[in-house]
Image (cartoon, rainbow, N blue to C red; front, side, top):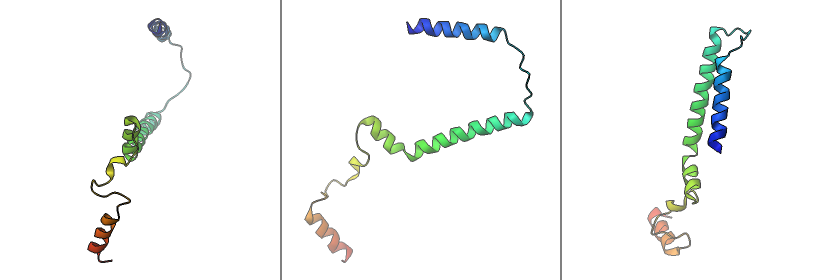
Length: 92
């Protein structure tokens, strides 16, 4: 069913492309540079956004919270012995 619809859309697009109408517009050479610049900036911005939120995206798709596996194995947040050993080594 979806294939029939997609095939019809492609057929209509091919027919429309076969009979072009004149566009009464002028695109100067600077327009191409502007469009290229906009495309490059869009790609780079998307890449930087993905890089900035990479761990959150991976955690979202895995179904876990970000930072779940980052705790050290031996230290429990409520473990007073681990806190005491850290305090004695830091000189406090």
